[in-house]
Image (tube, rainbow, N blue to C red):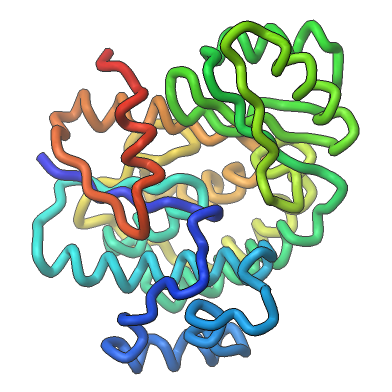
Length: 278
């Protein structure tokens, strides 16, 4: 069985989607109307260097992911879809749970709210299992630093208050085999520090209709197959709870998925090679 994977924020780069916008003029025009700015200009030229900014990066990544998915799903039948954080919106569109315009409106609002939470950061922790990272965070006694992404068996992300994060990163980086790399993001995403933004986001989610999927989606919030009746709650929780990517991949493999494709790069494909069979 085959699964199509969708990455989230972090894969943005100038020039992405350059060959897509002309193929999908109606969708591109609708995106411009929803966003109030040119998605093609941002992605292909980024004249104002906004691709670094969460407010613009998230809609850009989502929209390019969506157009790439249209090409791939026309060529191959997929048995499952899954997305990492922001990429989960692409999975929901691909599965028919949300239409493209409705999802883009949600992503635009999500990006706006997330970009307003400042003073935090994220760092990737490589070379340590998650149990070691958890123990180190407990031992440092820093109340505003949390596990944010469980990406692979020895690749995780911590996030939180910027000052406390620096202390935690230094302590974890001193452990044998550990490497800590700061990420170029503006906020403490997927931590309880994002809870106020998540509560505000619920208002946008309350206005959405989530249809039954024609293809199962495995949620990166729970690592389980998504029930559309729970979609609004899960998408709100996604802002302040960890990305359970190891659990997501484990569920997909247990369901019989043996082949994975990925849009917009190979970030998630690299994680797959570092998640052991269970």
